[in-house]
Length: 546
Image (tube, rainbow, N blue to C red; front, side, top):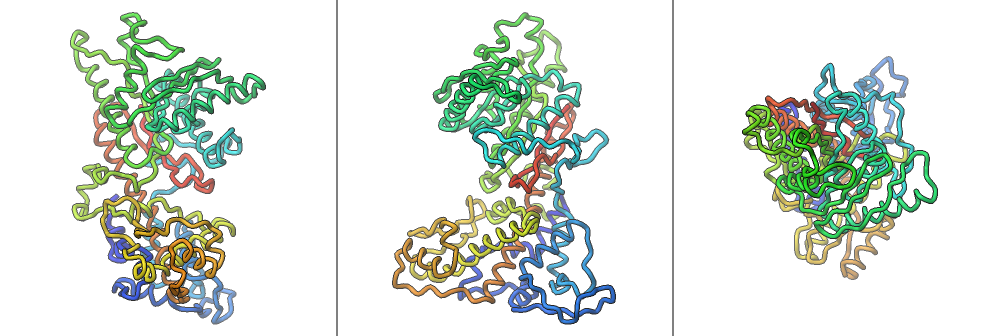
């Protein structure tokens, strides 16, 4: 964590993350001193390099066909693989030394994102072998390939987790927090036979999930699939209400719409397992005194808990774990009634730009690092944490997608001078570190998102902008090639820093959990569940287990 903090505090990286791409296109822009080497390098039209290596077969003065931003990406990928450049003839040698040093640091200090990798490693790590059979090609009704991949892989991981740890083997109850359309909830019920509480703050999402469940149940009754158990009927709940049903495999699914924070999460689980228990298991009132004394083990799960929802789930886990631990330290006559105990958790976060300011940093370990006191994650940091530059060069198709994405950034930046002059307000970031998003296009007449077709060529783009912004008589000059290359390199370098930002957030959360659960019978690790090539950029799960 300290190494990543030092790296993100490096003058070159911190200056890259302090500005928005739109700033570079302004006439008033002054290049920071830290940028001189790469700024000049990026402006070069054609890169040439000589063949001074006897082992290199390339001719002298060979011109690379790759633009500078792509050379940076290929160097980043080579560093991630541990490859070494091919002598001084390699295009990598044209990259300024200070930029190469930064890229090497960013690639080497970020958390690995290979499927199955866990951190910290230990003899009993929850390790998923990359050679295990993949279920990712199974299609699930109503889901995109990305969502199906995530639901199936997370279900498979939970199954393996429950089977591989004796203390988890009797777990029959799971809470899916931020369930959305309840794709994961239904799979846990149908595939693992769990009793599932699906919590979401949106009544629209909850009712939509119930309708999908009812529709799936009807289809299943007409033609039962060998891979899926009949889900039965469900009723559409109203806000704050519950809807329950059970499957032939004894699992059940209960939908609840509620505001989700630490207190409401604890209260919802208590109510679910208390007097209003769903069909399929006994309520507290129905239990014998000897049974009631044994809290039910509950697994907390979240597939992409947005923003600060991840810390809120963890706070609820800490509180419930501490309460359960207190029960073991007092005599029977002094024990409070405890309905359930948190047996484990598997949480995948997302949307760091939606985090509350107080949710980073969380750990004492981070605050003890040199330089931590003056370090803050700005809106730029949080937006860039979602970037996955390692996937940009995976195939020719992904390279073209990256090229198109950079075109959008460059052309939008090229409008900045015109929009500031004729729109009346700056469109680039304000610099407020706690503002959600990048504040891009913050105008009285907001440009907003344009269809991809608008970026087919510059003339089409200008025509679209003029029509949308009412700038029919305003001249909008095309970006000059030198500026284009500089903005491309600028944005690429910022995106290469993104995984390090996410790693810092994850490591801070890991240390925080270890601190809060110190002395309690839990282990915590970060496990890579999903293949980022599937589009699942946020692929790291926080796993808490006995």
